[in-house]
Image 1: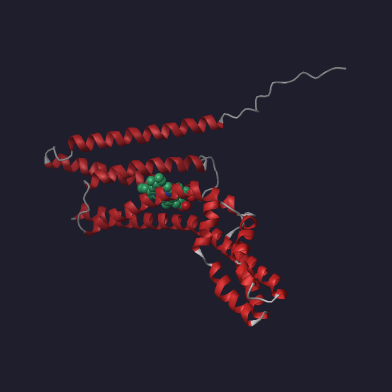
Image 2: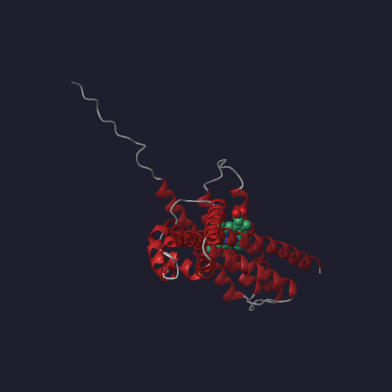
Length: 288
Ligand code: HEM
């Protein structure tokens, strides 16, 4: 029998991670060198040059900061394009972060660590909100998705979570409406507050637990209530407890989804306001 020769495969080994590691390293080098260069210029020259040359230096910091901020914001354009050969989104995000950081130093030196008159002060406030929200978003985008994956049973979008939450709340209230007066009172006073309890949501986050892992502990905590109810209502109360915990769990997941959406909204809004005030500032410097 003839055995086919084993061909050496050239496509098995992907070098793309090496490339992306190298590009990341290049961006880091760019950021470190740029920040070092800007800092050297600022600390060795600012305030020690004749006034007209000092003004040129200040303007140069401002121009560099603005151009870099515009470049950083171009990520927004890339996100709205299909691939079209303009580079991976992850590479753009990396560039965005490093360019944004260098821009922050250029603007810091442009302002000379002062807030100044109202327009520059508002402009700087929006600028720093943009930078701080960006750094916060980067941190959140590393922390929140793994937490969400740990606590959710099935990956779901916000609309699914809202509909499951509404169904469970309805289920619990229907059970309360169909039960005895004591049963309704216990659901209202003991289970309903649990649906919105921050402490309970915190337990999902802290312990990284799913609904299935929390339900037995929750039922144990609620056991005291069974003593107030007739035996035929015990199962219904436990069912209402399951609904209550499910609602709380949906709230815990919804909060994480909203945090992920919310920070980007803040980042984009402060960016837009910052560019608006930057235009006003540049106009007033050029014409007055
Ligand atoms: C001049 C400074 C900056 C400007 C003008 C800026 C602007 C923007 C804009 C407009 C977007 C939204 C893209 C979109 O969804 O349309 C964005 C996204 C983002 N920015 Fe910034 N940013 C700046 C600095 C930073 C910094 C310093 C960081 C982090 C250290 C950062 C982290 C991020 C992240 C993580 C995203 C989300 C990208 C994604 O959706 O995956 N930004 N930025």
